[in-house]
Each structure stands twice: as structure tokens, then as C-alpha cells.
Length: 108
Length: 213
Ligand SMILES: [Zn+2]
Image: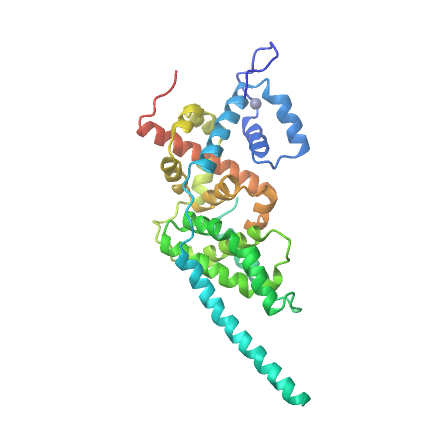
């Protein structure tokens, strides 16, 4: 967060920092309520602990998103799933064919 | 105060309702395969990563993913096309993990949840422990270091961070996946993050990250 434009000195102490941090996190997570977005905007220019808390939280969120290795599911797992379901589908097709034959026999 | 037992009970309850098959089938047999292939399979890498972060074990992760997909197929009629397939799948995976895997987990004895909460819930602890951890330090860390810190969190805390920060679910989606109210999502996430900051800070200290002056 950039240095605020107003000339008022920043608050060095935040009266309710835990609550502020929940609000800041909700904003960063894209899950904030309208009321929280309003208080966030009002607060971020004036309170140093909140500005620092925001920047730290943002850097941690970005590190989690961007730096942690994303693995690919092994091919064997996918083929196991398909195989198990493939057997089931083969049975279903078999049953469907039987029913059709039965119907044809009945109708003839 | 929540406890692990309560979370487990809840999960088991919801698991039952989730697995109650819908009486009128939504899909024909061939439609089932189409839904499965187009809506479920595309999430398999995210599912695998979630499973791996929960179990910390590749074999367990593979089993968990397979079980989840078999369940998803079995209960496909309770999935409505066009709704959030990823959240639906994550919920099944999370419930399978709690009901089947957590019990036989290879991990060391789990951290007492209440103890963790009381330790990291106090406001004074929060502001003191985070003053040391700087934005620049976090930015300098490599992925493995961040992953190690994340993995060291108790699984309930790890889960909310994975869902929120790595997978990008909203609080509302997380509430559905975890079967908890949104208020609990918010507070648990907040506590999880305080704990993660604490882990990152002590990690940074032991690894000798320089404090910028
Ligand atoms: Zn503040």
C-alpha cells in the first residue's frame, strides 16, 4: 500500500487490530461485504499497523498462490479411475443390449 | 469453542445426506459419462494437490483421489450440471479424508486443537509475533520454505488456507465444502494465518533471513 496522500500522521496503534485484520483479509480474499470494503478504504490511509498487516498478508497470499509447487495427478491414477468406471460402463452397455434384444424378441 | 470431534461428527452427518441417492435419476447412463468427463475430470490436478497437502503422502493422495472420483460417479445424480463442480468434488474429498484417512493417518499425533486456538487467539500474541516478519522476507522465501510452514499447521488450519489462498474459493464456497458457517470460516482462517505467520517468522529466524533495517 502506498504512502497516503493526506498529511495527518499515521496512527501507530490500532485499537481493534484483530477485527481490522479479518476485514483486510476478507478484502484480499475477495469475500468482503460492502460495509467492510467501505471501512477498509477509510482505514487504509490512516492506520500504520493495518497498512503493514495488509502488505504482509498480501505477500503471504501471493507466496502461497505462486510459489508452492503444483503437482500433476499421476496418469496411473486417472487410468485406474477410468478402468474401474470402464468396467462398470461395459456392464451397463451389456445390460442395455440385452434389454434391446429382449424388446425386439417381444415385439416380433 | 470448536473441537475436532465436532468437526468429525458434522462431516459424518453431511456425508450421509450427501450419499443419499436421489430417487429420480437426473442423468441417463451415457449422460453420466459426459458429465463425469467434462465437469469432474478437469479438476483432477487440483484434487490431487489438495489430497497431497492433506495427507502429506503420495500413495494416500492417489487413493483419496480415486475414492473421491468413484464416489462422485456413484452419487452423480445429486450433482446439478452448471453448479460448482470443483466445490462439490472438494467437499466429497474432504469428507472422505476425515472419515477414512484421518483415522489411519501416518502423521505424528495431532496437535491439540484447543491448545492451538488458545495460544494463537490472544490479541497481544498476534501483534508481537508478526512484527518480526517482514513483507520483504516473505517475498524472498522460496516455495519449499512456504510449503514447509504450511505443512506444519494442524490439518484444519492447513485446509482453510489451501482452499482460500491456493484454490481461490470464496468464503461462501468454503462454508459449503467444510459444512461450517461463514463466520467460522472467517475466524478459522484468521487463526490459521496467525499461526502460519508465526511459523514463517520462526522459520525465517532459523534460516537467518536478514531483518531489513
Ligand atoms: Zn487499524
